[in-house]
Amino acid sequence: MATTTHTVSNQAPPLLGHDVFGTDRVLGEAVERHLPPEVLDEARVGLTALGRAAGSVQAASWATQANEHPPELRTHDRYGHRVDEVAFHPAWHRLLGHAVGAGLTGAWDRPGGHVRRAAGFLVWTQAEAGHGCPLSMTHAAVPALRAEPEVAAEWEPLLTSRVYEEGLRPPLRKAGVLLGMGMTEKQGGSDVRANTTRAEPLAEDGAYLLTGHKWFCSAPMSDGFLVLAQAPDGLTCFLLPRVLPDGSRNPFAIQRLKDKLGNRSNASAEVEFDGTWVRRIGEEGQGVRTIMGMVAATRLDCVTGSAALMRQAVAQAVHHTTHRSAFGGPLVDKPLMRNVLADLAVESEAATVLAMRLAAAYDDGGESESAFLRLAVPAAKYWVTKRCTPLVGEALECLGGNGYVEESGMPRLLREAPLNSIWEGSGNVQALDVLRVLRREPLALNAFLQEVGRARGADHRLDAAIRDMLTELADLAGIEARARRVVERIALVLQGSLLVRWAPPEVADAFCASRLGGDGGAAFGTLPHTLDLASVVARARPVES
Image (cartoon, rainbow, N blue to C red; front, side, top):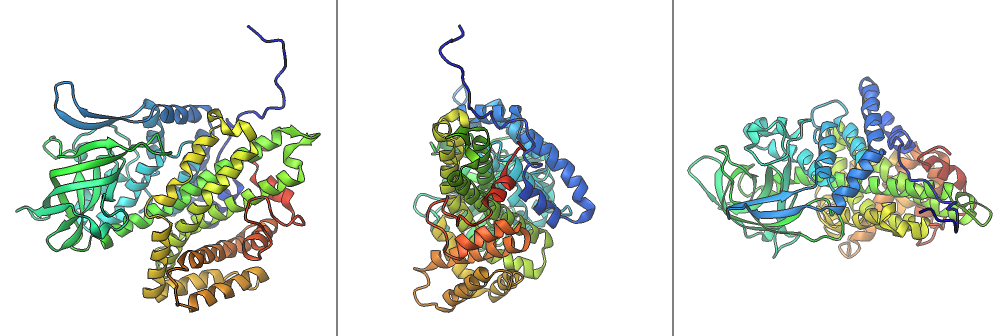
């Protein structure tokens, strides 16, 4: 029965039915900047289709269903046979199938492939972030597998396929496969050299049997996994198929699924190996070096995934405040709210521009760009993923109580926000990796300084920040205790240099003033009031009003 007590008004409509790519000016500019002209039109067509799908009512419904009905573990079948399978809601498969069909697991051998894939990943995971985990690992496994050309020749076409086939079958009998990863063990955590899983060689060349466990195994429903184990000559990388060529199940006991803060649509598991057949990837004792190609690529996806969460949070905040009135006018036009929104938008733009610059370096593949990535990826992973959680929390607050309820989608974003800071090495691991690169690879620092040097002279605050950073790097006393401070400065200088070169003046001015020049506070919404904040907010608006 209809109520007559009041009429609902002054509520923002849901942000649905829009093109996530086409309304993101920052991402569109980055794609145009970094892609070769001969593939730009084709890329735009694909990204536009993906953007419209990501902003659709259908994708929003899939995302809700996949998170309201998380994966379930089936250890045994009805007859008591061990099966160790994970069951997902159909919405999960639809999300994953759409992503695979859009090419989000393949980038390595097509012109501008990494930029195109990074842009697509940033667009599509705004619909739902949990299924980005298997997409990321499947894509990232390619460089590690290439350490064994024979294995890569079999698996790579399946990893980069645009066909998604759910269910466990022999990998070579499927049109497309997914790959997961298992490195972390109970006693070691990030210290993977403390792993105790044993690999015993068989008579067959390159074949071993594993005995041990993994405390965190990502995406346990995948067709195969890259894992680390102790071989006779030390820690080694292995490929573990879930189903063997004869159709039998490889011993892979899923003991339980993790009950996680967020990322609830995706499965993470504790698994045990007992006579599990694997194929060696790379040389014995070189496991960390072999798998680092995969880790570097997934770390870039942590940056890109965080940029996606930031963009979606900012889009929701700007959209809501554009349609919400308070104290006599649109909320978006109130000076203090405008400051908050502009600050959030600047942070989001800096994250997107940095993620796309790193993707472009992958596409270049030259010695200088590769050296640049070795320093820039862990620094970006440290900083961008750290900034994601406070940004999403502040964006949620812009919606007030409406943002605190599940229907808004904001709580799901907030639960997801800390993940990328933890996955593939938490903040301290990233900071220590940066120090290792600085100590051992002078080419990486030179490439980084050449990159930020391209913006020298364009903004005095950036120039001063570069000088301060060099002073920090020159003082090696107690540098490990200062590692976070050093890496933060490296990341901020890099972001500032990119924005000075490529962003509108009002965005670069706001970033340099607040992040480099000290004219900003510890919370969002503390930009200098003299800046052109209205233009910054208008640039971030997801739909024209």
